[in-house]
Image 1 (spheres, one colour):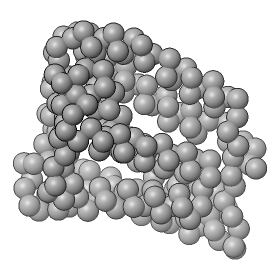
Image 2 (image 1 turned 30 degrees about the horizontal axis):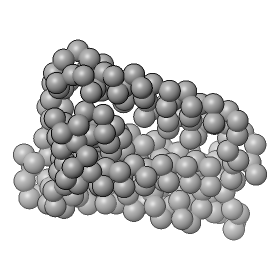
Image 3 (image 1 turned 90 degrees about the vertical axis):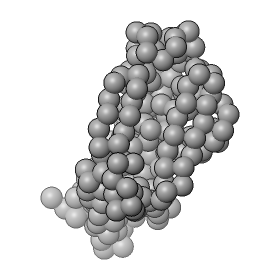
Length: 215
């Protein structure tokens, strides 16, 4: 396999791992907006906690995370280059460093609690290995893609991307109906959470779709 194709493969692996992590931004953003003050969320980076209830508290944080996620994924999939590599590597390094700090300081703090779906797991070492490996893949991919002084191919936003994104966002009214009328543990709330997670996967698919013809 040519170096450029290997580099693109490594970049895509790192992008999909980053995309997976950003569900922890998209889900709180949607639920905070639709659920209202009854929904509470929290996130910690290097011991600094961010918390919100509805659109109060640190709501700006999940909003900024989501904007960053869309920028990283759009640039990484469609406009790979120095800026996209810097943003992607920065996000992965932030998470790898934060998990390393948390695991050393307080392993119990790395327990993930998804109360609506009844999920409680310790993600410490797994997350550290995941983000550390993704960071290595992103950096190695950038080096390989630029072998010989060539610029990685760029891809136009097409009609197929627009349609796929519209389909991904179409369930928002249904999500509002499900999430705003439930109290946190009801079937409607659980369905709304699952739909929101699937929606993020559909958004990621839309951003990366139709990359057969470089600009």
